[in-house]
View 1 (cartoon, rainbow, N blue to C red):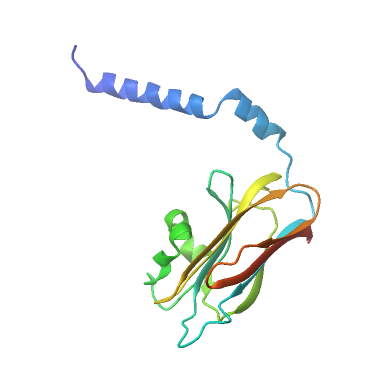
View 2 (cartoon, rainbow, N blue to C red):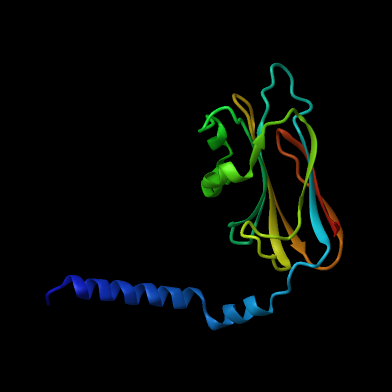
Length: 185
C-alpha cells in the first residue's frame, strides 16, 4: 500500500480530531457549564515572609507567587520579582517551577526584587486571560531563589467556595512563613 502525502495528512487530521474528542467529552463539557463562578466581592489574600533570618551578605531573592489548577497549569500569576537591569536575568531560571510554564510572561508580570520582609498579594478570582475563575480546588504556589542561596517552594491545596477561610501554609527555607485568607475584598 502506498502512502501518499494526502493520505498521511488525512490520517493526521483524523487522529487529532479523535484525540480532541477523547480529551473533551460531553461529561466534561456539562461539568464546565455548571461550574459555579468565583463569588462576587471575594478575594484570596496571600501573605508571606521572605528570609528575615538570613545571615551574611544576603542577595535579594527572586520570588514568584501564582495560582495553579488541579492539573498544575497556571491560572493566575500574582507577582514575580526579578532583577530588572538585564534582558535575560541570570538567576530567573532558578524559579524552576514558575519558569517552566511562564517565562514568556516575564515582561508583563514582573517587578523589581525586594528586600527580605513580609509582603502580601491578592487574587481577585480572575485568570491571566481576564475571565472569572470557577469555585473549586486550586494550589497556591510561592517560589523563591537567590544567587548562591537556598531554593524554596511552597505549593499547597486550597478549596475556594462561598465561605471565608484562613490557612497557614508550610514554610520552606527562604519562605519563612506563608498564609492565605479568603474573604470579602
